[in-house]
Length: 154
View 1: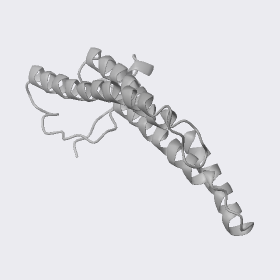
View 2: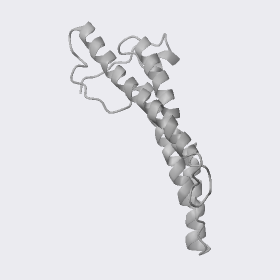
View 3: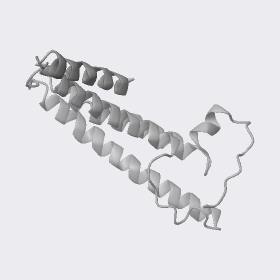
């Protein structure tokens, strides 16, 4: 939804700049803030779906408990980063609450709040992933009785 708003605002900006020849100053600024929010929110969704880049050296490791340990350690590292995002992001947003954006004059707290909000969402998802069985995905939660798809080796 945020990306559709960015596209619409960009089209408005291009129209006013090149057709009407009277550019609107706030379009680039609002697009920048919407893309920041979209990026952080998408990172949270991608984490839960397992869509982030990974190094799958131990994915097919024959010892199941060792795969589980590696999986848990990786999630704990991500969770630690989420805690840092919350711990440092919230004070940063509050510190910028008095600053106004140059063109739109909105509180800079709103763009900066994307960091702790995304950190909180990702931390919840890390906890959910830690509670799920090894190899389970978000799709398994939506359809718990669905048959396992064939996963071919690349």
